[in-house]
Length: 455
Ligand SMILES: Cc1cc2nc3c(=O)[nH]c(=O)nc-3n(C[C@H](O)[C@H](O)[C@H](O)COP(=O)(O)O)c2cc1C
Image 1: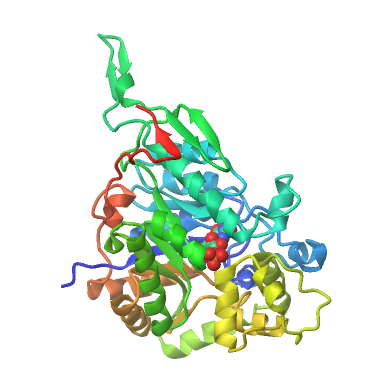
Image 2: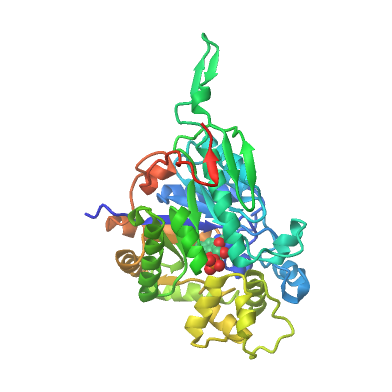
């Protein structure tokens, strides 16, 4: 029996579709995505199957870069709805006791105090089950919603994010774990020597303040991140405890995993303490024939405009009116927002200057090939997952092609098979997300040159 078990994370959206936009058109998808019952049903399924976490992605605008309008997104339901994920996950928390719950929040458009307080409050309210997916956001539509004319440049976004996360972490550890006294007789609430002031002076932020939420049972929320570029990897190396990634085969996976672990080691942290989790899809059924039929139906809901609209949204470039075979010049490629996605298309298309057609074909955006799909019977899917787990990752971020069907199929068919192989736990190790992921409880960081946490 192996003691190493797969981390299972559900890739959720507080919106009208899954990562696969066509999912909302599926007869198998339930349309009540604006109700708590929809998310609670999924939460119960995931907890019964011993998933480590449900995590919500986020975007702060509709996709309106393609053609300079949101009309296509509205008409076709292309990630049109985006509710606040931190609020949606409280509905899931209310019906579960062990499932970890992650939400995305932007370091480019939010403020450190707000993020620190919201996530620590959630962590208290769930007994220590929360994670924060740190993103720097992707496009000018998001900038416009926050009253900014343009999206910050790629590497500057990460510079701001470094400062942002340091401040958040300093806030989160401002209260020592034993700071609360609550002695009614003596009239002593907390020990002032154990509640620290947070001061930070950098290029983006000047903070000198007091944090208002004590530490949670797991210390503070788990940090998730998905940097893929050189700058993004350095950022992940410094901060991430679980790294989201995307690759399409074992060789690429081994390279990606090694690069992530190198970045973690370069930042002076233990590479074995960081989990690498690629995003994958699963199409499973009782027989191969049924799985194939299911995939055919699912694929039938894809539309080409979904891919175009989503590519423009993530790359922050308007493809409309451009000849589809015209290669992008080097300077156009340099200006694209998501470097990891751009570089994957360059690598898989085999051309250093891909065209719109190459991006549509090789990105998989808008189809179920986004990332990678494991398909077949329960044992065939388990074989594929086991092969990746043994060679290039610590678990998976599972995206859905219908909701709630994909998670119900996976829980009913694949999880028991993985449990029979001792690859997935049959009960939770503890009550906090850190305990279940095997992560250490964080301690108060040492003072640095720019961020000086006060006595
Ligand atoms: C599994 C996964 C989930 C992601 N979720 C989000 C998200 O919710 N919001 C967002 O703005 N970006 C999201 N991203 C994008 C990353 O935050 C990041 O911008 C992207 O990986 C590009 O980083 P790079 O420029 O360093 O390559 C996600 C990426 C992956 C692989």
